[in-house]
Image 1 (cartoon, rainbow, N blue to C red):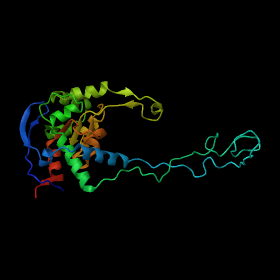
Image 2: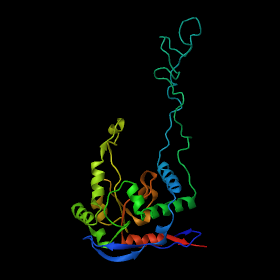
Image 3: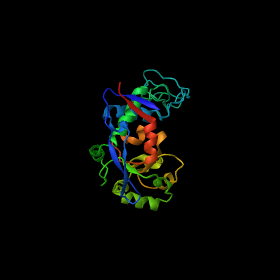
Image 4: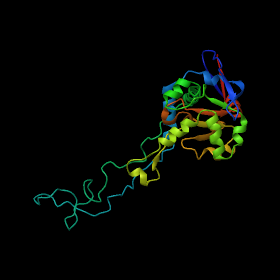
Length: 269
């Protein structure tokens, strides 16, 4: 349980629960965390902190480019006064072939942007609240016809194990056009990244939050372009606000909603 202290009393929102056929079967009260104000600055900061935490520090061999024995010829030879071999080839200096780098990468460089625990918690709660703002979700570029977000679905969604069946359910929930947007927006990366395992740039589509990472729908959803399926207990800012921009189109099962309610508690002093 993570407690968020908010100075004012937060009103709770209500959202319909949809069946697999797209028809409402009930109504649920969203936890108070979905009614908090959206702090875009905190979400951006928490996203950068989580993104840079995964970077691998890179350095150079201290003797790289220095393993040649050379000596400057001095003056009056009409050549630059850099270390040279007996053959006249310049070595060691930064501008020479095979020489050292002037400013090589160092492992001492600070890559990880640190963030306070309370800031990180409030940023995650703010990113969750952004998923319930329809206008903010549309501003992020998502295409859907559902009247409210997040789209709450019955727990039977987690038992779907085939991608074709999941596609029919997403079409009935009126969010399939966002998956089509991600497929049409997939482009070949420019530059040398094509040769390094990053050939395609794929836009982010909807996020499916389930109660367990062992659910069959995890395997069914990973084949869809731009779709991420994540368990409620490991949900992070990286999932809710890709690129640091809050308001991702989110589908959520009822069991996942209950787990999020247990994970976050908003209290007023």
